[in-house]
Amino acid sequence: MALAQSNQLGLAALTIGIVFLTIFWFKWTKNISYKEGPKLPPGPRGLSIVGFLPFLRSNLHHQLTELSQKYGPIYKFWLGSKLCIVLNSPSLAKEVVRDQDSVFANRDPPIAGLAATYGGVDIGFSPYGSYWRDMRKLFVSEMLSNRNLEASYGLRTHEVRKTIRNVHTKIGNPIDIGELAFVTQMNVIMSMIFGSKFVEEKEKHGKDGSAEFKEVVVKVFQVLGKPNISDFFPMLARFDLQGIQKEMKALSKSVESILDPAINERMKMLSDKKEGEIQGNGKKDFVQILIELMEQKDIGISLDLVKIKAMLVDIVIGGTDTVITTVEWVMAELLNNPEIMAKVQQELKHVVGTNNIVEESHLPKLHYLDAVLKETLRLHPALPLLIPKRPSKSAIVGGYTIPEGTKVFLNVYAIQRDPQVWENPLEFQPERFLNHSTNLNYSGNNFKYLPFGSGRRICAGLPLAEKMLMFVLASSLHSFDWKLPEREKVDLSDGFGLVIKKSKSLFAIPTPRLPHLELYQ
Ligand code: HEM
Image (cartoon, rainbow, N blue to C red; front, top):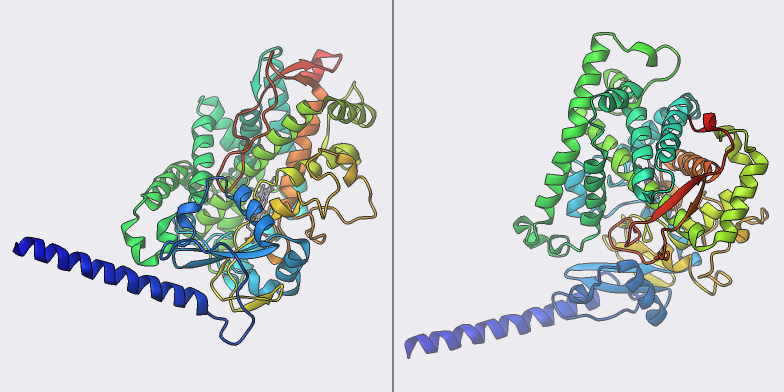
């Protein structure tokens, strides 16, 4: 009897608690931060306490695009105590990345992102301010300077040629295109970071470890794309209920197990003054540049090993999955549109010639291939919601208030497929990028086309990404004809994660196009 009574009391207290919390939540979410300014945008209400969380689907970019059709170009939803606002039109994009960029250049790093980057001391997740500015400047003007990019031309050529040789040994057999692009891109990145000897030594000892590392990189982006209760209910963060933080820490350890020995070895070589062939002729690797800068006192930033490692994580993780995913999408679209692939190959024949192999100097002349790449990044932007932003103060966008601390998604996927912005948006038509009177390029100045973002936080690796994508694609399409395995069809559906990959790996069969064997050596 006493037990039943106490159970009833407990139930009553719980009901009152829930009612109280619900009323509090409704009042709080209704009144937050727009007491004096315009109201919050419209949007789906969701449930009390948890908001829209139970309705989130894994393919967030599709869902957010569907919601824009119902709620318009700017809408909001709540994930627990976190207010999220989604922007879906070029004019709203302009408001945040041009007119109010200094407010929206701030990031909203998820807990998993902080776990991957030593607490967000990298470039991608660090808050907008002097630290981010100095780190980005180091990367863009020291490591990716024109001089360094030119000096590393030999490394890129070496890796791309190796890939072509490798494909030639597999003529007539299905090749995993993502795997092919991964090995090339990873080796280029690793040799730019640690020097060409690093990659050569690994290969000599038969441990390039790329398959294993690819899995880690892909997983990092998947985990970054998972909704994490800890991000939406900070009170619960320390319990890590879904184990996402733990999972990311384990992945981070795997990345460290590759980076740490290489950094230590490089530091030892430098202190022993045995830099070998890479010093003295302007070809310094990234770690060498960073270690030298760490020892200088007057560069405006106090670099230490943790910050160096965080920057390397951005480069290794951010610079590989984006590129390989894009190569895969380009090849999938070309296999799906054989007449467009034929046009690309005709251009290569004309610019490069069939008695020749592709050099980086050919790339600026490949206008049609460039248009194919741009059209692919329109339909399949690697980061369809960019990296979410968090305004550093309350702002008004599209006539609505965006309170400080909101998670802001710029839905590039929706903008780049919007029928009000693009003619026949779902058709693959590279020709739309051949009209040079429009500024439809990667600079982020045309707000209907933003695959690399825009404004202060535009992709920091853009010059390298563009070079690598064009070089790998031009070489593969010049050296080989490609077809799908028997009875296969191109599957253009996409998966989930921060980087949007094809849901099914793409396999294609190469046959040689060039007349002489030595062009494959
Ligand atoms: C297809 C290739 C790539 C695509 C589509 C891409 C796209 C992007 C996008 C959309 C952003 C966020 C921009 C924003 O929020 O406005 C970004 C940021 C960034 N990307 Fe890339 N990226 C690519 C390749 C690379 C490469 C190769 C590197 C490095 C070697 C790199 C390094 C970075 C870094 C460091 C940031 C953070 C910039 C900051 O917060 O200031 N990316 N990228």
